[in-house]
Amino acid sequence: MPYGSADPRSRLATAASSDTPVTDYSGMEYAEFAALPPAVAVDGREDWYARGQNLVVGWSRVTGESRFEDRDEPEESVLITVDAPLTATVEAGGETVEVPGERLVVVPPGPSRIRVQGEGRVVRLVRTTAEDLVALAVNRDSYAQPHRNIPPFVPWPEPVDGYRIRVYDLTVPTLPGSPFRLYRCTTAMVNWIAPQEGPRDPRRLSPHHHDDFEQYSLVIAGDYVHHIRWPWTTDRTVWRDDEHRRVGSPSLAVIPPPSEHTSEAVDEGHHRLVDIFSPPRLDFSAMEGWVLNAADYPMPATADGAVDGVSA
Image (cartoon, rainbow, N blue to C red):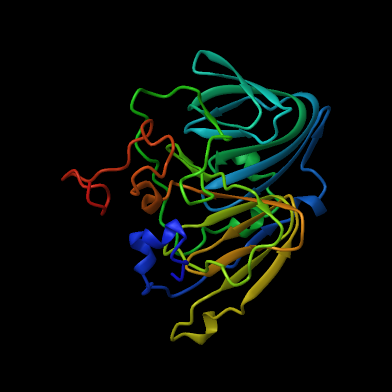
């Protein structure tokens, strides 16, 4: 992976990986919410949905006070109050927690209720076991059959002190020398990347690939070009043309393995992109100090105590 030497990802063990056993490819998934009517429109809120193999991503615009549909999920889900003027009330597991804006909330399994008020944007991440939300996803038909090259979903270990509502501040400093803020739970990882002011330097992009997991790139401000290239195999019938897709905000791109990809902020102004993975990324998690809430969520371990192929 040709990360620059200043990019912290250049230290990942996976950065040296090059040979990917692939026989077939899935294509990109794009959901340009700004150009689509909402899937749900109620007083005080509009919702859009798109999906990948393992997650449904909900994007909401809140303009007052609203209550999301009550849920009863078998696994953890995530709520993000993107903007400071928002507040949310989360009820789950016998708790009621008041959440300010600019927070990431992990909602425990079981019955839950979320109310929001104010002005701003909300993101929800729910496993694709939620059939009602899958049915609302703009690209639901793309996953009528599971996409190739992605292994079956396996949740990560339970939190060390049990399931409960957990709230994390998204305004804390980024990792030293990096624009990243990484959080994980049993079902997902969120990289709350610092905003980009003005265009990205086209001489300092970071094309890379993932062997066996999707990347959900959610553009919440500005304009980006997603540059995508698939490797060639001996079977020319599965080759795909390069893509250079410009998208605005809000939009979601689901990037399949093993495509080579990088995203470039373009034009002047304020840009922000959030990367999401399900389940959490093992390589990011294995880097000491990278995941800000790692103390709450242990990594998967093998019978001999090693961390899933990474020395413990």
